[in-house]
Image (cartoon, rainbow, N blue to C red):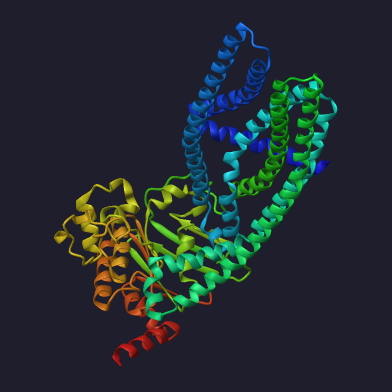
Length: 597
């Protein structure tokens, strides 16, 4: 009983939320749909009595006034059918429009929630399962409003038809209701089985979608053709689809078997009504119109009971689904924007004994990292793969918070600053930079999108990044599309030029802190040298931090921090570290020997 109360309480909350979203999506459309649901309750009942009168007129003795009665009732029936047909089609049209608006409202809600959460959630596979379940189950929120109206509608119809049927026989309505109970139980059982199956399959469904995306996506097209591995991916996709189809077929077969078995009793109950009325006609206690009235009322009573019980089952199924959706919307970022200080410029950066491990892991990625960087200076982070260099950049961007220690910006704990104003001070190039199939103008200006129409600034940023695509000779200039997603004449770029686009984005922002995480990984040696020369020029009067594996690039930095196994093992200028004859000295000479050879 306690469980039922809890579920009912949750369901009421979901109903309120569903009504709110439906109203918010479009008040006029919401009102019309409610009006139609109320009207659609009355029309079938009125139709039954009109049909009864017409049949009674036709089966009675021919009197002169009967013709006018027949014309009136027939005319009313035609008018009622026309009104019903018009309102029904209008409702279908408006319901489609309203549904699209509600879907858009819910999609925006999900997108806003996903973008609110910090990057740490994307490191956890369970988050993707929860997100997929939430996206799939969000559809229940849209249907819940109309489920509640359908429940009210079915109750009104149920009561009306019970009253009609009671005039025939008090025993019959109870028989019809009892005959529906097995179907109610079966529907609830199947719905629970299906929902549990969908929850269990969330991760496998993502895998199925992944392999389908590999076979369809442009990013994998070259590899699949060159390595001739399409059969492998097709096999993986086919095997997973067969597994899904086999499980789904079992669910569908179970539903078919139970629904057919449970439909037999209700058919017997409606047949019983027709037999009783038919015998009454033979005995002279019922009219031919009664046969139409009670036969139609029995069928509609059966539909009302089925609808009502189905709505109850659907509501509690929606409650299960929407609990998952509500739980997803309750997720809060681990890095919360609680800071109130506004910041317009970064003058100093200090890591003070910073230690960090990624969420849901116990392994320390960084341990007691300390360094200071002031404006007009640069810092290079060097070390082997997995040493923790990129993690320092993520912490500085406040994508994560340290487990221990502090990050001080202008002498103040980073957590005290408003994240939005802080991010406005930073230009960054990531190792796994994103490729946007937008116009050059939009792509470069994404870091400061309000200045998207400043042509000269966009072109200057491209020049500073040594972007060699001949913008001046392009027919549409900086309005040329990158990639062919939106324009068949779009520009296809090399990996190096895509990286230069990312660098141009950082230069375009003109921030006080510039972060470069492997900005030269896809560049040729000449472009690399030009990039670091340009960074030195543009980095004046700024704080510059860059991660690099090429130690020749590190020589341009004011200071170098050598990271190994998450710890700072050496810190100083290139000259100072070479004189130490330590780890940096060994790494630098090994790379130098490679180039000399």
